[in-house]
Length: 381
Image (cartoon, rainbow, N blue to C red; front, side):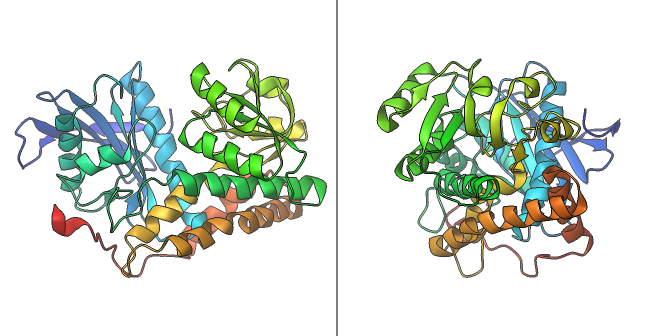
């Protein structure tokens, strides 16, 4: 468990749904953690705001059928803390937050459930801004928008839409950075890249790598998705159990987190890890195991910041600008090279170096938001 739960008390929110209940949970090291329930629509959710020193918390809404509420709490705490560091290094003027809805996105997701969640977000009055994540789509956030303006990534002319392309491009640039660090050139031509997960980001990443000349190995728990990606890009398909053990230059995790741990790291046969997954390390101590194996690690909260960078421009006072977003995503390459340099200079892991940079920026309030976010789509709610 991340953090320590101290106290729990309930209050009933005011608004359209009399059955919507927000229950604060005090967790050390977090500004606000809230359990959200609405028995009428079957909503059970958690919202975690980790740190808002640099600006309001921004982070996606994950819909996942967690086996236990404790698992959901652990996930939302880890994810929101990661968003704090991601936003800090990215310099977007936001803090870290995340939310999870405990449900099966294929069978339990309804407009009523999403709108009830949106009403809960609205009660926080902008302290937390939600977005698309695992289990949610741009159409889902469009429904959430019916009950709150505090949402980004909308399929709307004033919004930025699906951020997957920007996340994938940022990861591509991150892969170029590890290749540069290892081989002295950032060309991926002829390099073997293993992609774990061929969902929206993983499949887009495969495309960027294919056109840059990389040889691909892919895997997904959805065998049809992996086969489709393989056919399109001439990739080799392996099973989900094999993907972490294949011999490759770069392993790109693009599925769920916690895949780098004391069980999996001994079997790794890659030279570097650079992927889109949040919280790839089960614990910070696992980074020491990676370093002992001589594996270069691109810290996840740095390399996968493209989606955050993109939606941050959506609520810029001047409005969304895809060219500005592209330029910021492009800089992920230089940011990572700088982190590798700090790690070598300080004789620490790349993960610790990234944390050092993030925490230093927060402590010195570098990149603190000076203007309030503008929700250009809010007039239509």
